[in-house]
Length: 284
Image (cartoon, rainbow, N blue to C red; front, side, top):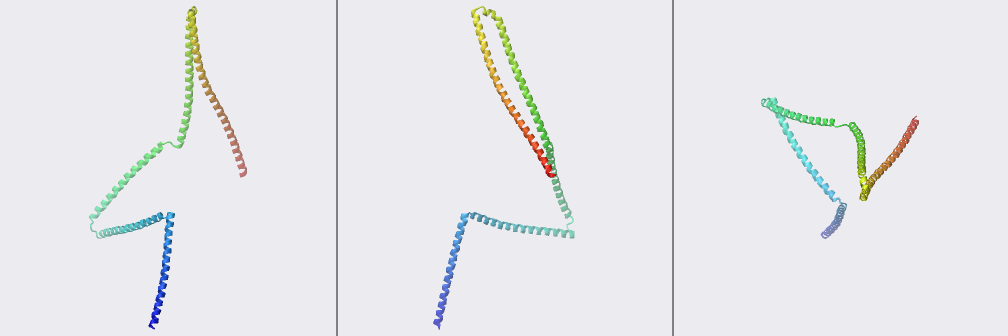
């Protein structure tokens, strides 16, 4: 009987060992699978770049815990101060009720009143300084021109500019006329002096062959100088004529553009009138 019972115990022990081994194998398999899942998860985290986000989350959680500790410390400090103030208030109430230290209480009240008055005066001075600054800024704003005044100034300056340009053109024209007349005067004086010299020396120069040669040479020099002067004047005239032609072309183009704008404006006004008539007809 003992051998049978021992065999049964041995078999049961073996069965239990087998069950434990199977459970151990299952746990090892689960452990391996969990380890593989963790490795896969870590690889995914590295690939997706979420490791930095997790670190930021951890740092934020640590900061949150730190803030909670600071909040608890502040609350405890606040409670301690509140308790001390309540104790002081209760002491003052007791002193007022018992009438003790009646001589010291007015002094403390006077000190607090003086401090309050000093703070009030300081605040009044600061307020007065700010009001003065505001008043000065308002004066500066009042001195600054408004939008309508700026528009009037702009119109006035544009009119003044147009008037100045007109006066400048007139002045340039007068200077050009003066220079031309002065040049004509100089030429006429030269011509007069030349004619006078020819008239005074003609009889003496024509009497001898040498005099006639000198007279001819001087006349040729005068003719060459006159031709050079004439060529220079003609070149200037051509340049001025070119400028004048250019201005005429620009003026013609501007007149054509003005006529086109007038025609477009007239057509636009007619279309607006038609639109108004159609609107009135549809509304009625």
